[in-house]
Image (tube, rainbow, N blue to C red; front, side, top):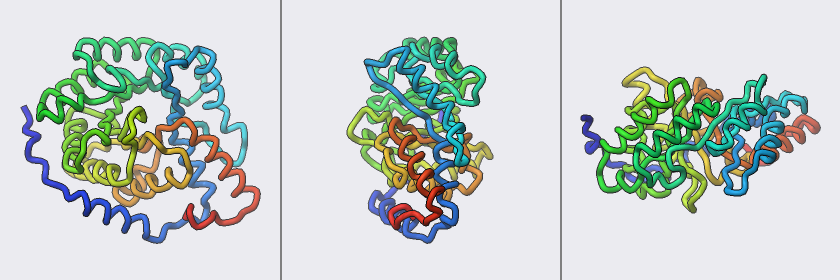
Length: 295
């Protein structure tokens, strides 16, 4: 049993100050269209609505695998993310492409189900063709201080994932403090997460640069100690290219260029893709530098 009670206390105000300092630093945007195209290729195109249908998911998958055909150096997105009952539909629609199937599973978004239900749902999603699983931690148990229970649940789900990659959603908006975000990051990585993810997008508290910095520094420390690269996925409220660029810059600043790849950086969004295409198209057509807000 690991003791997760000794996470160093983190000053929330200091985090905000350091985020501002990083984002105010000069940044090389000599080819901004290439940067935004790269971000498009890191996108998990997502639909997680109760009204999702087979047809809606098939249409989204066709879109996900068609960006390269637009030219302008655009890649297809990294993955589509759906509910487990639609993973099989997505798998068929994406056959022959490099776009991966991700599914939210394990009592998404609240996490308020017993472990056997969570494990069963994850197993079902993998059987349906999910290559990546996005799970949520039990925030209530975490806030009660039951850190090892949270660890055990993640580890059990990681085992049933098999070859599928596991993204662990912390739901940072419910964790209240930077110290809690750091502790939850440590628990998820120690339990075997391939990625740690900010948010479900289903509550008011979505991804924030402050929470991202805490998670990125946890990843850096974990990599320095173990040599294992864990990915980072901001999600929730990321609808504009300039917002995505902030997370891209923070990741590069804290973790280095090796993490600026879809294997280690993803963006969870439903509206961002079209905005990125418009920005790239405009920049390619005019060869102008982006406005100050994008620098």
